[in-house]
Image (tube, rainbow, N blue to C red; front, side, top):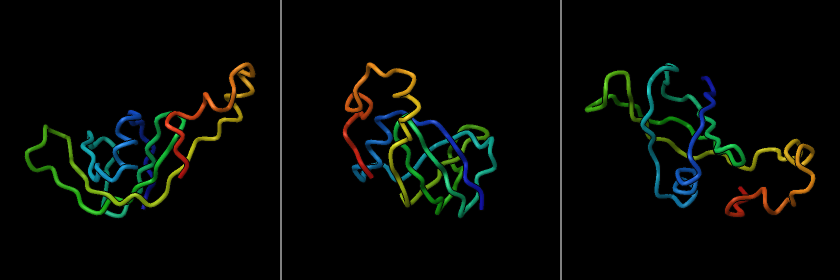
Length: 100
């Protein structure tokens, strides 16, 4: 089992949190396998999902779709950001106010 680290847009993290998104389409340049974990981050928040189904049916060459279960999530450690930009308040660091 491997944990893959990938970037994801904030609107897609929101859709996962809302329970509307349970799959991902990705280029298979990482060798995704059943049981792997994927850590998806928008730079502030992250989610960890467990791959439970994979298919390349009707996908572009070298692309797959995988279904997943959301197993963990939270906010990135923003202390470094606050040290780099002390004028910004902590509230401005949290988009959407999601705590997982």
